[in-house]
Amino acid sequence: MEMEWPGCLDEYEKLVIRMNTPRVVIDNAVCSTATLVKIDSARKQSILLEAVQVLTDLNLSIRKAYISSDGRWFMDVFHVTDENGNKLTDESVLRYIEQSLGTYNSVRTNGFTGLTALELTGTDRPGLLSEVFAVLADLQCNIVEAKVWTHNGRIASLIFVKDVDSGSPIEDSQKISKIEGRLRNVLKGENDIRGARTTVAMANVHTERRLHQMMFADRDYERKSFNETPTSSPEVTVQNWLERGYSIVNVECKDRRKLLFDVVCTLTDMQYVVFHATIDSRKDQAYMEFYIRHTDGSPISSEAERQRVIQCVQASIERRASEGVKLELCARDRQGLLADVTRTFRENGLNVARAEISTTNSDMALNVFYVTDAAGNALDSKTIEEVRQRIGLNNLIVKETQTNYTKGDDTESAGVGGAMLLSLGSIVRRNLYNLGLIRSYS
Image (cartoon, rainbow, N blue to C red):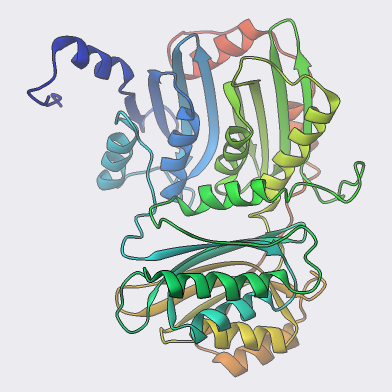
């Protein structure tokens, strides 16, 4: 398709835009089990994150990926499937991918216009979410969308609200101050040593991208002691390849949707640039290898920095991989619905580890909760059924039990994320081969 140019651009400006506009090719013929999405582009800061974000926002699974940054050029290929594990055949989806990835700047937000965004971070505790929703209901705030993550004793939430009476964003400075103050008091509780934060922000943000930034800024990756690493943590190793000036990050854990997005978010937030990477998934296991440098061009320079990278990458995987029972609530939306539901959870000893709140155009609430007992352990079926009886058997449905994120016993693939250092030439040749630019990399 011929690119249309504004009349004010001269030939040099057109050339610059052509050079910086990614070239996107979608191929359904090469692989029998996945659709290949190939991207060639001039390298720029965060370009990998932008590409992965577009694919994950469509709820696509990235089964394999090969990333290579050669000088000032960025080339990668993603093997993707839909939610059911099939190749992509919907023409509208394929066109959207091409248009989104093939623009000069492909950054997307969630597009929650006409809403006020509340950012909350603090110390997690059983029943906290119930108290937050009760405060918002009391202050006549209608919750339209929200996402809540908990990890390592901390909570981060991004809540999009509007005024109950007017249906408009909340812009009155006095009311905003009152909301912030009351929520801050709830988040502080009695034992919040690190401190709680409540902020009214712009609504045009990418929710999950922002949640990663909030939890990273809140230092949820920190352990109580330097050597404390939970046995259920993903396996992450970091070592330097000083001859080539790279640090190599290897990750092995259970595969899941949005895994690559979560890890790349954190590496980007930590000011690292991914120059080469290989991502693979076999059965239910994921293996990722990243060749990174700091934005100033240097590799990891100390043991403390190496440990910090390990902890931060582990945290990025664990935030979304909350254990617990997945409950789906589908009911007619009304003022105070979330406050009532989460109060019922609290009264029956259920703790919300993660939540996704949404409202349809037809005023139906579609909410997902991942719940455990107060100690973070699995719930018994009797307790769950009692809660369903109180809320409504047809409204609250048990969907699945979450599994953890540790690596399995699949020894066949153990070497993919291992510690062996490959030569840079081999990495680049392999990635160019997978991009279809050379015939062999042996």
